[in-house]
Image (cartoon, rainbow, N blue to C red):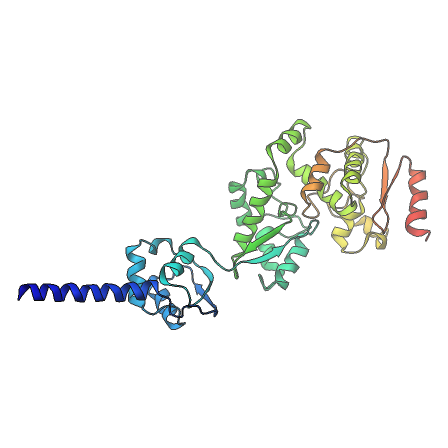
Length: 346
């Protein structure tokens, strides 16, 4: 009799084990091509997650999902985010997605030379923010002198390159232009950190050493690079223009870079007026000597390198034609002639 009961228990356990194995490893809808967007909110617990999976028809058993997660020690590794799931996935496959953070990614592309205003507008169009001011509250107001946000102060502790940045300017110049993968509804601060980490990786030790050997700071080079990004098209021309502008600074000349005024006015350089050149702003390189208060855009690596590895030349003046060609001049007389010829004498 005992043997019969023992065999019966073994049979029941075997059947139960087979049932559990099937429920865990056999998907709800094998071969299904259906997909379901599934969201795990920050701080959401295992019970809530399993209930939602059951609700959306992605698993067959809440209890077995929770049991498998607990026995596999997956609970502590569950990551919040937006996931793309299918009823053709079994429980281990779903949990692997959750623990690896294999979330749905969106791509955003920040173009070289975009200012904070342009990035803020782009983020609004992409639905990342509702109003540009949300972005400026984090990175600082572009083109204005003021105290930095508490977040920027905190970021300065995380990123060494921000420690030399004056506290009264924004993060203009440091949000590295590139294509980034982000999660839907990703926190704006997290996106900003990604861009700063990318900047940190792009500024190599060789670049830092060369900048230091020239007696310059990264902030000064970044400011110069932002002028080059806006003023000149090719790398070779940027190197020559960088040499001209560094030479003007050494000689006590005003930089008189039109791009600093377009940064303030938002108008094309050919539309600038005499009144514009009198705007009282530390970004106005016609009114004030030296570099502007800070970068006027977020330059790419090529412009940064051109500002560092600049070329000396006999030129003191330059202009960029509407077609993007750079015309260099040795004298003011020659420069004025070229201005009439290439800009106004058409």
